[in-house]
Image (cartoon, rainbow, N blue to C red; front, side):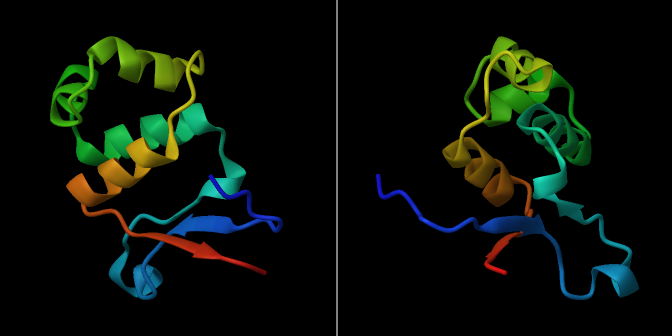
Length: 92
């Protein structure tokens, strides 16, 4: 895996989010456990339903949200595809 020497800032946003009242989240301001919970809450699913749709066990979701296990980038991307969440990375 290539290590990137600069910090990429990731955002979940839509260019018209303010006009369309679409939830926007600046990931840099949150811990991984908070991001996992926010994504699940956006899905409006229980931990069990969310886990099933991701082909994971409910316990994994509990670990992500509790901070005892960090959610991986591949899982974040899978969630984004499954729940129509746009992830944009910007270099400042």
